[in-house]
Image (tube, rainbow, N blue to C red; front, side):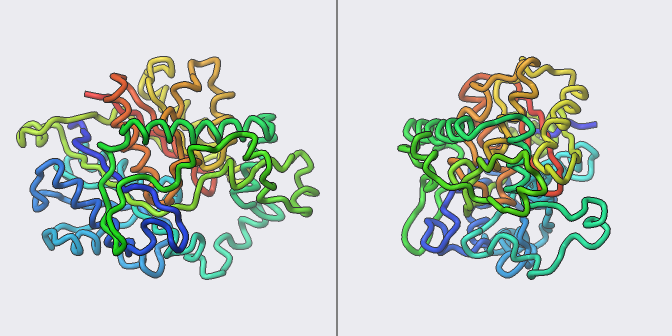
Length: 395
């Protein structure tokens, strides 16, 4: 079986996912198209040799409804014979795209694949694909009577289970902004960002980072999901989750070039990392955000690599309780807060749903190189109580 190697990974700057945001005037197809162009130009790979383009996107409706990867490839003027498909594993869609690309390469089905994601949350409203209908059905309501809860309530359940108080959540969130602001100021993000041309000009930096964020300022925010009926159902909830300790609604796109090691060598390209292990699993859909914990255990077992050997962990900051619960769970196994999202996470950088998985991979790849680390781990919690885990080795 061939090794699947990563040759390059790029992302757009992150824009606020609302009208007037830095990327809100760009159609999601064109946003992704500029990202694909940036990826291919950076490597010099002939786009005609790409076997498939796998793109994560969650809200596949409206401007994101017509296989956005295919439309983006065509919009960028790239060869018509290259196909594309769209993947929805909720917040892990972009990461799952990388998994599918790597699996196809390892199996010998593809030599070269592009994997990534796109989400314009300013133009395609989160949840709009539901068309205001019930996506769960009677069987799920009956099994989890009186029904599943929102991700915000799930974050509250996680905070209660791991006894995380409001001060911990706000301190972590302020630290996410501080870390991301430091990276932006130092130029550490520059290599991974593809500038985006908009009608208003060129966007080169993340718009979402707030350098002056402090735990004291965050403490003034009201709980975002407080609900009397939920309190009656779950009296353990303390109502600690706010807009400030949650991920930001964001516009963005990302792309990763994956190929087999033999093709990489034949083309004279430098492989930057190889994918050592992949895993996806489910967990309790009620608490929803806990699956990165069993996913971590399984991928460590499969790889034989310990947490103390992993120099950088990217765990999506959907809500502050997610990384903090993970730290509590693995503190005795070698997890170190200094190695968890050391460049900030979705609380500061934002969470453009379908694009986040490949965005985290992009940041992870560049951070491994900058820090001289050998192994990196990427984890993503997902709606429905799922998680993807990817272990990469820098080459």
